[in-house]
Length: 442
Image (cartoon, rainbow, N blue to C red; front, side):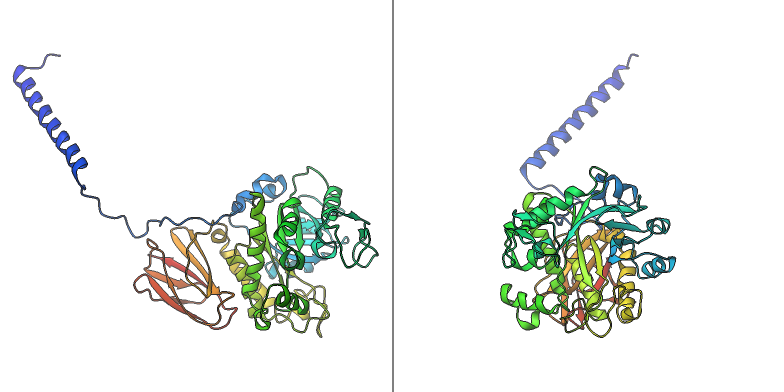
Protein backbone atom coordinates (compact mmCIF):
# COMPACT_ATOMS: atom_id res chain seq x y z
CA UNK A 1 0.00 0.00 0.00
CA UNK A 2 1.33 3.47 -0.95
CA UNK A 3 1.38 6.23 1.74
CA UNK A 4 0.57 9.80 0.56
CA UNK A 5 3.58 12.13 0.77
CA UNK A 6 2.00 14.60 3.31
CA UNK A 7 1.18 11.71 5.64
CA UNK A 8 4.64 10.19 5.16
CA UNK A 9 6.29 13.48 6.14
CA UNK A 10 4.19 13.67 9.29
CA UNK A 11 5.18 10.13 10.30
CA UNK A 12 8.86 10.97 9.84
CA UNK A 13 8.54 14.03 12.10
CA UNK A 14 6.72 12.01 14.81
CA UNK A 15 9.34 9.25 14.69
CA UNK A 16 12.18 11.74 15.03
CA UNK A 17 10.49 13.38 18.01
CA UNK A 18 10.03 10.02 19.67
CA UNK A 19 13.70 9.22 19.19
CA UNK A 20 14.67 12.54 20.79
CA UNK A 21 12.56 11.72 23.87
CA UNK A 22 14.10 8.26 24.10
CA UNK A 23 17.64 9.71 23.96
CA UNK A 24 16.80 12.34 26.57
CA UNK A 25 15.26 9.70 28.81
CA UNK A 26 18.36 7.52 28.54
CA UNK A 27 20.60 10.49 29.37
CA UNK A 28 18.49 11.27 32.45
CA UNK A 29 18.81 7.65 33.54
CA UNK A 30 22.59 7.81 33.34
CA UNK A 31 23.13 11.27 34.80
CA UNK A 32 21.12 11.13 38.03
CA UNK A 33 18.39 9.47 40.06
CA UNK A 34 15.12 8.75 38.37
CA UNK A 35 11.78 9.27 39.93
CA UNK A 36 10.90 6.01 41.73
CA UNK A 37 7.43 4.57 42.01
CA UNK A 38 5.73 4.75 45.37
CA UNK A 39 6.41 1.86 47.77
CA UNK A 40 4.18 -1.20 47.59
CA UNK A 41 1.41 -1.89 50.04
CA UNK A 42 2.22 -2.64 53.68
CA UNK A 43 1.26 -6.26 53.17
CA UNK A 44 4.24 -7.00 50.92
CA UNK A 45 6.50 -9.68 52.41
CA UNK A 46 9.76 -8.47 53.97
CA UNK A 47 13.03 -10.01 52.89
CA UNK A 48 13.54 -12.28 55.90
CA UNK A 49 15.95 -15.19 55.63
CA UNK A 50 14.43 -18.63 56.22
CA UNK A 51 15.50 -20.92 59.04
CA UNK A 52 17.14 -24.13 57.83
CA UNK A 53 14.82 -27.14 57.92
CA UNK A 54 14.25 -30.56 56.41
CA UNK A 55 11.51 -29.41 54.05
CA UNK A 56 8.37 -29.73 56.14
CA UNK A 57 5.63 -32.09 54.96
CA UNK A 58 7.40 -32.44 51.61
CA UNK A 59 10.11 -34.43 53.40
CA UNK A 60 7.74 -37.38 53.76
CA UNK A 61 7.27 -37.61 49.99
CA UNK A 62 10.58 -39.46 49.73
CA UNK A 63 9.12 -42.43 51.65
CA UNK A 64 6.21 -44.24 49.96
CA UNK A 65 4.68 -45.27 53.31
CA UNK A 66 4.44 -41.78 54.77
CA UNK A 67 3.46 -40.30 51.41
CA UNK A 68 0.60 -42.79 51.01
CA UNK A 69 -0.52 -42.10 54.58
CA UNK A 70 -0.99 -38.41 53.82
CA UNK A 71 1.90 -37.09 55.88
CA UNK A 72 2.74 -34.72 53.03
CA UNK A 73 -0.50 -32.83 53.73
CA UNK A 74 0.30 -29.38 55.23
CA UNK A 75 -2.69 -29.78 57.55
CA UNK A 76 -1.15 -32.86 59.20
CA UNK A 77 1.27 -32.64 62.14
CA UNK A 78 2.51 -35.82 63.89
CA UNK A 79 1.37 -36.08 67.52
CA UNK A 80 2.28 -39.41 69.11
CA UNK A 81 2.09 -41.34 72.35
CA UNK A 82 4.85 -43.66 73.54
CA UNK A 83 4.44 -47.43 73.92
CA UNK A 84 0.70 -47.90 74.15
CA UNK A 85 -1.54 -50.93 73.87
CA UNK A 86 -4.50 -50.69 71.49
CA UNK A 87 -7.03 -53.45 72.11
CA UNK A 88 -10.50 -51.84 72.03
CA UNK A 89 -12.32 -49.02 70.29
CA UNK A 90 -12.44 -47.23 73.63
CA UNK A 91 -8.63 -47.15 73.64
CA UNK A 92 -8.57 -45.41 70.29
CA UNK A 93 -11.41 -43.05 71.19
CA UNK A 94 -9.65 -41.81 74.31
CA UNK A 95 -6.39 -41.28 72.44
CA UNK A 96 -8.08 -39.41 69.60
CA UNK A 97 -9.95 -37.21 72.08
CA UNK A 98 -6.60 -36.24 73.55
CA UNK A 99 -5.37 -35.23 70.08
CA UNK A 100 -3.15 -38.24 69.38
CA UNK A 101 -2.78 -39.40 65.77
CA UNK A 102 0.28 -41.68 65.96
CA UNK A 103 1.38 -44.57 68.19
CA UNK A 104 5.15 -44.60 68.71
CA UNK A 105 5.83 -48.23 69.68
CA UNK A 106 3.04 -50.65 70.58
CA UNK A 107 2.56 -53.85 72.53
CA UNK A 108 2.55 -57.01 70.43
CA UNK A 109 -1.08 -57.60 71.44
CA UNK A 110 -2.24 -54.39 69.76
CA UNK A 111 -4.91 -54.59 67.06
CA UNK A 112 -3.35 -53.09 63.95
CA UNK A 113 -6.58 -53.41 61.96
CA UNK A 114 -8.35 -51.33 64.60
CA UNK A 115 -5.68 -48.64 64.35
CA UNK A 116 -5.93 -48.71 60.58
CA UNK A 117 -9.75 -48.55 60.64
CA UNK A 118 -9.64 -45.38 62.75
CA UNK A 119 -7.16 -43.57 60.52
CA UNK A 120 -4.39 -43.65 63.11
CA UNK A 121 -0.72 -44.37 62.44
CA UNK A 122 2.02 -46.46 64.04
CA UNK A 123 5.81 -46.45 64.33
CA UNK A 124 6.90 -49.81 65.75
CA UNK A 125 10.10 -51.64 66.65
CA UNK A 126 9.17 -54.63 64.51
CA UNK A 127 6.28 -55.76 62.33
CA UNK A 128 3.26 -56.54 64.51
CA UNK A 129 0.82 -59.21 63.38
CA UNK A 130 -1.71 -57.73 60.97
CA UNK A 131 0.32 -54.60 60.24
CA UNK A 132 -0.25 -52.66 57.02
CA UNK A 133 -0.32 -49.10 55.74
CA UNK A 134 -1.03 -47.73 59.23
CA UNK A 135 2.60 -48.58 60.07
CA UNK A 136 4.43 -45.63 58.54
CA UNK A 137 7.93 -46.04 60.03
CA UNK A 138 10.22 -48.37 61.99
CA UNK A 139 11.66 -47.67 65.43
CA UNK A 140 15.30 -48.80 65.58
CA UNK A 141 15.49 -48.67 69.39
CA UNK A 142 15.26 -46.39 72.41
CA UNK A 143 18.14 -44.67 74.25
CA UNK A 144 21.00 -46.81 72.96
CA UNK A 145 23.18 -43.76 73.52
CA UNK A 146 22.66 -44.20 77.26
CA UNK A 147 22.63 -47.94 77.89
CA UNK A 148 25.19 -48.95 75.25
CA UNK A 149 27.34 -45.84 74.93
CA UNK A 150 29.18 -44.36 71.91
CA UNK A 151 31.33 -47.02 70.28
CA UNK A 152 31.75 -49.86 67.81
CA UNK A 153 32.61 -52.64 70.27
CA UNK A 154 30.78 -55.94 70.04
CA UNK A 155 27.25 -56.30 71.39
CA UNK A 156 26.06 -59.38 73.27
CA UNK A 157 22.47 -58.91 72.09
CA UNK A 158 21.30 -58.21 75.63
CA UNK A 159 19.22 -55.23 76.62
CA UNK A 160 19.43 -53.50 80.02
CA UNK A 161 18.60 -55.91 82.81
CA UNK A 162 19.36 -59.02 80.72
CA UNK A 163 23.06 -59.35 81.47
CA UNK A 164 26.35 -58.02 80.03
CA UNK A 165 25.88 -55.61 77.15
CA UNK A 166 29.13 -54.90 75.34
CA UNK A 167 32.17 -57.00 74.44
CA UNK A 168 34.51 -56.58 76.23
CA UNK A 169 32.28 -56.40 79.29
CA UNK A 170 32.83 -53.21 81.29
CA UNK A 171 29.60 -51.93 82.89
CA UNK A 172 31.32 -48.65 83.74
CA UNK A 173 32.43 -47.98 80.16
CA UNK A 174 29.87 -49.23 77.64
CA UNK A 175 31.05 -48.62 74.07
CA UNK A 176 28.80 -50.59 71.70
CA UNK A 177 25.94 -48.19 70.93
CA UNK A 178 26.79 -47.82 67.25
CA UNK A 179 26.91 -51.61 66.92
CA UNK A 180 23.51 -51.83 68.57
CA UNK A 181 22.03 -49.31 66.16
CA UNK A 182 23.50 -51.03 63.08
CA UNK A 183 22.42 -54.47 64.22
CA UNK A 184 18.86 -53.55 65.13
CA UNK A 185 18.33 -51.48 62.00
CA UNK A 186 19.56 -54.39 59.87
CA UNK A 187 16.89 -56.64 61.43
CA UNK A 188 14.04 -54.43 60.26
CA UNK A 189 12.32 -54.91 56.87
CA UNK A 190 14.42 -53.49 54.10
CA UNK A 191 13.46 -51.24 51.19
CA UNK A 192 9.77 -51.22 52.11
CA UNK A 193 9.30 -47.45 51.84
CA UNK A 194 9.27 -46.80 55.58
CA UNK A 195 11.68 -44.35 57.26
CA UNK A 196 13.69 -45.29 60.36
CA UNK A 197 13.27 -43.53 63.69
CA UNK A 198 15.17 -43.59 66.99
CA UNK A 199 14.87 -41.86 70.33
CA UNK A 200 17.90 -40.90 72.42
CA UNK A 201 18.47 -39.50 75.90
CA UNK A 202 21.03 -37.94 78.20
CA UNK A 203 23.94 -39.45 76.29
CA UNK A 204 23.33 -37.29 73.24
CA UNK A 205 22.16 -34.30 75.27
CA UNK A 206 24.62 -34.20 78.16
CA UNK A 207 27.31 -36.90 78.33
CA UNK A 208 28.75 -37.05 74.81
CA UNK A 209 30.70 -34.64 72.65
CA UNK A 210 29.46 -33.52 69.23
CA UNK A 211 31.40 -36.19 67.34
CA UNK A 212 30.07 -39.03 69.49
CA UNK A 213 26.49 -37.78 69.65
CA UNK A 214 26.51 -36.79 65.99
CA UNK A 215 26.97 -40.39 64.90
CA UNK A 216 23.84 -41.43 66.78
CA UNK A 217 21.79 -38.61 65.28
CA UNK A 218 23.04 -38.84 61.70
CA UNK A 219 24.03 -42.41 60.86
CA UNK A 220 20.93 -44.52 61.43
CA UNK A 221 17.72 -42.52 61.19
CA UNK A 222 15.35 -40.52 59.02
CA UNK A 223 13.38 -39.25 62.06
CA UNK A 224 14.86 -38.59 65.48
CA UNK A 225 13.96 -37.45 69.00
CA UNK A 226 15.57 -36.90 72.38
CA UNK A 227 13.98 -37.30 75.81
CA UNK A 228 15.19 -35.51 78.91
CA UNK A 229 12.36 -34.81 81.34
CA UNK A 230 13.48 -31.49 82.78
CA UNK A 231 10.41 -30.87 84.90
CA UNK A 232 10.45 -34.25 86.62
CA UNK A 233 13.81 -36.08 86.30
CA UNK A 234 15.88 -35.94 89.46
CA UNK A 235 19.04 -37.36 87.89
CA UNK A 236 18.77 -35.28 84.71
CA UNK A 237 18.92 -32.15 86.80
CA UNK A 238 21.98 -33.40 88.69
CA UNK A 239 23.72 -34.26 85.41
CA UNK A 240 22.84 -30.86 83.96
CA UNK A 241 24.30 -29.10 86.97
CA UNK A 242 27.51 -31.11 86.75
CA UNK A 243 28.01 -31.19 82.97
CA UNK A 244 26.04 -28.26 81.53
CA UNK A 245 26.70 -25.96 84.48
CA UNK A 246 23.01 -25.40 85.15
CA UNK A 247 22.13 -23.72 88.40
CA UNK A 248 19.80 -25.72 90.62
CA UNK A 249 16.91 -23.39 89.73
CA UNK A 250 17.52 -23.63 85.97
CA UNK A 251 16.42 -27.21 85.42
CA UNK A 252 12.63 -27.21 85.75
CA UNK A 253 11.92 -24.81 82.88
CA UNK A 254 9.93 -25.11 79.69
CA UNK A 255 12.73 -23.43 77.75
CA UNK A 256 15.00 -26.44 78.34
CA UNK A 257 12.78 -28.60 76.15
CA UNK A 258 13.64 -26.19 73.36
CA UNK A 259 17.32 -26.72 74.16
CA UNK A 260 16.82 -30.42 73.40
CA UNK A 261 15.66 -29.48 69.90
CA UNK A 262 18.55 -27.04 69.49
CA UNK A 263 21.04 -29.75 70.41
CA UNK A 264 19.62 -32.15 67.85
CA UNK A 265 19.39 -29.50 65.14
CA UNK A 266 23.06 -28.66 65.68
CA UNK A 267 24.10 -32.32 65.48
CA UNK A 268 21.76 -33.07 62.58
CA UNK A 269 23.40 -30.34 60.49
CA UNK A 270 26.86 -31.89 60.81
CA UNK A 271 26.42 -34.20 57.82
CA UNK A 272 24.79 -31.56 55.61
CA UNK A 273 21.44 -33.36 55.60
CA UNK A 274 18.29 -32.61 57.58
CA UNK A 275 15.63 -34.84 59.11
CA UNK A 276 12.49 -34.10 61.16
CA UNK A 277 13.20 -33.78 64.88
CA UNK A 278 10.40 -34.69 67.27
CA UNK A 279 9.81 -33.43 70.79
CA UNK A 280 9.38 -35.76 73.78
CA UNK A 281 7.34 -34.54 76.76
CA UNK A 282 6.29 -36.40 79.90
CA UNK A 283 2.67 -36.37 81.10
CA UNK A 284 3.18 -37.71 84.62
CA UNK A 285 6.05 -38.64 86.92
CA UNK A 286 8.20 -40.94 84.79
CA UNK A 287 10.73 -42.57 87.16
CA UNK A 288 10.44 -43.98 90.68
CA UNK A 289 13.16 -41.64 91.95
CA UNK A 290 11.49 -38.53 90.53
CA UNK A 291 10.22 -36.16 93.20
CA UNK A 292 7.53 -34.31 91.29
CA UNK A 293 5.05 -34.67 88.44
CA UNK A 294 4.75 -32.26 85.56
CA UNK A 295 2.00 -29.65 85.87
CA UNK A 296 -0.57 -28.78 83.19
CA UNK A 297 0.90 -25.36 82.33
CA UNK A 298 4.41 -26.78 82.43
CA UNK A 299 3.39 -29.51 79.99
CA UNK A 300 1.93 -27.02 77.53
CA UNK A 301 4.98 -24.81 77.87
CA UNK A 302 7.35 -27.73 77.22
CA UNK A 303 5.48 -28.59 74.02
CA UNK A 304 5.42 -25.00 72.82
CA UNK A 305 9.09 -24.43 73.59
CA UNK A 306 9.90 -27.49 71.48
CA UNK A 307 7.81 -26.20 68.58
CA UNK A 308 9.35 -22.74 68.78
CA UNK A 309 12.81 -24.28 68.49
CA UNK A 310 11.84 -26.29 65.41
CA UNK A 311 10.28 -29.58 66.53
CA UNK A 312 8.46 -31.21 63.62
CA UNK A 313 6.36 -33.55 65.75
CA UNK A 314 5.47 -34.25 69.39
CA UNK A 315 5.58 -37.53 71.33
CA UNK A 316 4.13 -37.88 74.85
CA UNK A 317 5.68 -40.23 77.41
CA UNK A 318 2.52 -41.87 78.67
CA UNK A 319 3.96 -43.84 81.62
CA UNK A 320 4.20 -42.76 85.24
CA UNK A 321 6.35 -45.01 87.46
CA UNK A 322 6.81 -42.53 90.30
CA UNK A 323 4.58 -40.78 92.78
CA UNK A 324 1.27 -41.91 94.24
CA UNK A 325 -0.50 -42.54 90.94
CA UNK A 326 1.35 -44.99 88.71
CA UNK A 327 0.17 -46.05 85.29
CA UNK A 328 1.26 -47.04 81.80
CA UNK A 329 -1.78 -45.29 80.31
CA UNK A 330 -1.74 -41.85 81.93
CA UNK A 331 -3.76 -40.20 79.17
CA UNK A 332 -6.54 -42.79 79.49
CA UNK A 333 -7.04 -43.27 83.23
CA UNK A 334 -7.34 -41.37 86.50
CA UNK A 335 -3.62 -40.66 86.73
CA UNK A 336 -4.03 -38.22 83.85
CA UNK A 337 -6.83 -36.20 85.42
CA UNK A 338 -4.56 -33.17 85.81
CA UNK A 339 -2.56 -33.29 82.59
CA UNK A 340 -4.95 -34.84 80.08
CA UNK A 341 -6.92 -31.59 79.59
CA UNK A 342 -3.65 -29.74 79.00
CA UNK A 343 -2.53 -32.32 76.42
CA UNK A 344 -5.88 -32.08 74.66
CA UNK A 345 -5.73 -28.26 74.67
CA UNK A 346 -2.25 -27.86 73.24
CA UNK A 347 -2.94 -30.61 70.69
CA UNK A 348 -6.06 -28.75 69.50
CA UNK A 349 -3.89 -25.69 69.01
CA UNK A 350 -1.34 -27.74 67.07
CA UNK A 351 -4.02 -29.22 64.84
CA UNK A 352 -5.59 -25.82 64.12
CA UNK A 353 -2.22 -24.23 63.40
CA UNK A 354 -0.72 -27.19 61.48
CA UNK A 355 -0.74 -25.30 58.14
CA UNK A 356 1.23 -22.54 59.88
CA UNK A 357 3.59 -24.87 61.73
CA UNK A 358 4.29 -26.65 58.46
CA UNK A 359 5.75 -23.52 56.84
CA UNK A 360 9.42 -22.60 56.99
CA UNK A 361 10.24 -20.26 59.87
CA UNK A 362 11.78 -16.84 59.26
CA UNK A 363 14.85 -15.43 60.99
CA UNK A 364 14.43 -12.39 63.21
CA UNK A 365 15.93 -11.57 66.60
CA UNK A 366 13.30 -10.23 68.97
CA UNK A 367 15.82 -9.65 71.76
CA UNK A 368 17.14 -11.36 74.86
CA UNK A 369 15.11 -13.24 77.40
CA UNK A 370 12.48 -14.47 74.98
CA UNK A 371 12.22 -17.44 72.62
CA UNK A 372 10.34 -16.77 69.39
CA UNK A 373 9.32 -18.34 66.10
CA UNK A 374 8.10 -16.20 63.18
CA UNK A 375 6.11 -17.64 60.29
CA UNK A 376 4.10 -16.36 57.36
CA UNK A 377 0.96 -18.05 56.09
CA UNK A 378 -2.11 -16.94 54.17
CA UNK A 379 -1.16 -13.26 54.08
CA UNK A 380 -0.62 -13.04 57.85
CA UNK A 381 2.42 -13.37 60.10
CA UNK A 382 2.43 -15.58 63.17
CA UNK A 383 4.70 -14.97 66.14
CA UNK A 384 5.08 -17.72 68.75
CA UNK A 385 6.73 -16.40 71.92
CA UNK A 386 7.59 -17.37 75.49
CA UNK A 387 10.35 -16.71 78.05
CA UNK A 388 13.73 -18.13 77.07
CA UNK A 389 16.29 -20.04 79.09
CA UNK A 390 17.88 -16.77 80.22
CA UNK A 391 14.55 -15.07 80.91
CA UNK A 392 11.56 -15.41 83.15
CA UNK A 393 8.08 -14.03 83.81
CA UNK A 394 7.40 -10.41 83.04
CA UNK A 395 6.72 -7.94 80.26
CA UNK A 396 8.24 -8.14 76.78
CA UNK A 397 8.21 -5.70 73.88
CA UNK A 398 8.28 -7.10 70.36
CA UNK A 399 9.58 -4.86 67.59
CA UNK A 400 8.41 -6.27 64.27
CA UNK A 401 10.74 -6.56 61.28
CA UNK A 402 10.48 -3.79 58.68
CA UNK A 403 7.74 -4.60 56.20
CA UNK A 404 5.71 -6.79 58.52
CA UNK A 405 2.18 -5.36 58.66
CA UNK A 406 1.53 -3.95 62.09
CA UNK A 407 -2.11 -3.03 61.95
CA UNK A 408 -3.62 -5.67 64.21
CA UNK A 409 -2.11 -8.17 66.64
CA UNK A 410 -4.44 -10.88 67.90
CA UNK A 411 -3.46 -13.22 70.73
CA UNK A 412 -4.82 -16.50 69.42
CA UNK A 413 -6.86 -18.72 71.76
CA UNK A 414 -7.07 -15.82 74.24
CA UNK A 415 -9.82 -13.66 72.73
CA UNK A 416 -7.88 -10.39 72.92
CA UNK A 417 -6.17 -7.85 70.70
CA UNK A 418 -2.99 -5.95 71.48
CA UNK A 419 -2.36 -2.35 70.37
CA UNK A 420 0.59 -1.66 68.07
CA UNK A 421 2.65 1.52 68.35
CA UNK A 422 5.51 2.39 66.03
CA UNK A 423 5.74 -1.16 64.72
CA UNK A 424 6.00 -2.68 68.20
CA UNK A 425 3.72 -4.16 70.84
CA UNK A 426 4.09 -5.24 74.46
CA UNK A 427 2.66 -8.21 76.31
CA UNK A 428 3.21 -9.99 79.62
CA UNK A 429 4.12 -13.56 80.54
CA UNK A 430 2.81 -14.71 83.91
CA UNK A 431 5.10 -17.73 84.33
CA UNK A 432 8.26 -19.15 82.80
CA UNK A 433 6.02 -21.65 80.95
CA UNK A 434 3.56 -19.04 79.62
CA UNK A 435 3.37 -18.72 75.86
CA UNK A 436 1.44 -16.53 73.44
CA UNK A 437 0.72 -17.04 69.75
CA UNK A 438 0.16 -13.78 67.87
CA UNK A 439 -1.50 -13.38 64.50
CA UNK A 440 -0.31 -10.16 62.84
CA UNK A 441 -2.38 -8.66 60.04
CA UNK A 442 -2.58 -5.25 58.28
